[in-house]
Image: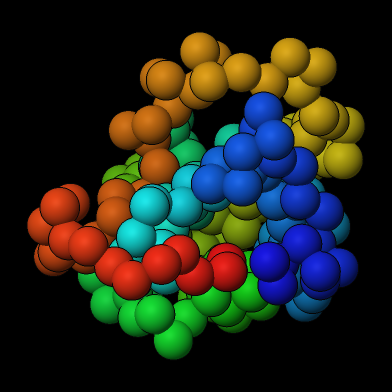
Length: 177
């Protein structure tokens, strides 16, 4: 798995390579610089032909991330995913671009979008407050007892698999994520 061979810290959930956490650092020269987030990733059986589900575990203030669930509103993951993409693209390109260029016209967090459009200075201050409060390294400490039972409520809180394919679609073999 390319992601596990990279510099990213990856923690599997119950040794399952289909569901894991990735430690993600805010992009340099952004409001999120210095912040550290735990991102939950779930790979569907048909990955890479179907998109992964990606969600922030610790809180982040952003128009395109649901504040309570961590779900990501990111078109390239949810609707235009291609098997040519891999998880490295998600963490090196898609998520950094999302944080650098919020889209207030397509919000998951209406309050953040409204504040961004109304008062950019107040928005920037709130982003920095959230980073200080919720995105410190100790906020993403590994859970001692990760189990699927604890994750059942989170299943709906991540980005939807945006593939138009039917769940019964067969693929030839499994790809190496």
